[in-house]
Length: 470
Image (cartoon, rainbow, N blue to C red):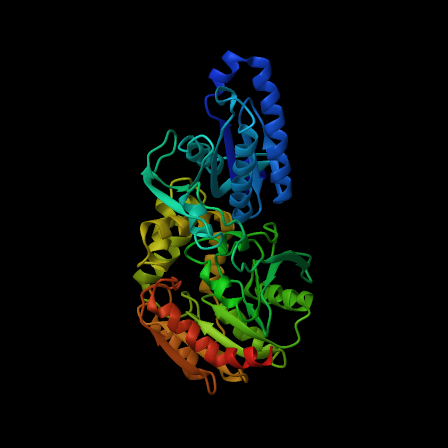
């Protein structure tokens, strides 16, 4: 496969094998094969029930994938429960116990097969499970911890074969019996087509007054909902609203082969999503580069926007704000850095951006953000985005915004200066400005600034009033 032909995706991977398979075969080859055939059919039925698919079944191994990590863990629990009952019918020395490992990760897809570290990690996690047991990776645990009513035992960071970094591993406790998830807001992924023929992926979740998030530089809807760096944004935004977000052209699940990556085209993407979703009146949220997109859209379609929310936004890009020559050259040098290092397995290049976007993040969060960058788009497209972002200029549009506007900005933002946010608020008539005490350009769910952010938005768009009317 060439780099252009590689198709990557985020998926939940289940890997299973039989404990003591060689001993079973040595003692009774025919009986073992018969039992394995029956048990595989049971496993396959549960996988199908939970909307997964069997990818491969070499020897005593089984590899499956799921669109939902919650479904994958539920499936594993049901498999082990059923096989325990089946094993009770056999003599102790003929019992066949499966070890199951589950990971949420990036894979390469070729036809019906999947490859890559995501698969390898699932297999290594499986090797740490007991017979009849289940182990899950840290990325899987982060998503299911409070959703299934299960108990987990942290096994620490494990060093495993052919995986460069230690893995966080958790054992699902066997005495866990609750399989029904707590309330889960599922996203529905849809597609629409822009006026220039580009297919845009968008998703909806929740119910209530619509809240649309404009696309920004880094976007991958599947990963956005599960990454610890970003998952709280769609999760909390969809609790009281019909939340709509999309991947901009050239990113995520949208078409990567779009020729036009201009700021004007980004506005057309938003228009196409709004029209496809059938939204007549909605709140619009613009974060970072999504800010100027939202500003331009609001000026063009004021009758559609009930509230405008801007976070980490700016009116002029880095190439338009009169930077000193040395700083301007530094920003331009980042373009070359993106082209060279964005798609490499070594995250050192992407780490430069990660420390700018989320300087207060933990190591695990930084790894997740590194992955988001690589999965969102190609090095070439990321570089074109960076240049186009630098040339944005909507300063003259700010006084033309005629809808209620809330502007929030991190006081110590390393990506967009606090002054840039203050300027936006000062030039939009009647806009309210809320400083947030953080260094992070992307607010993390465990910091006080996130709670303040949610409180201000709820007050602004009247969440309590919506509840009363429901």
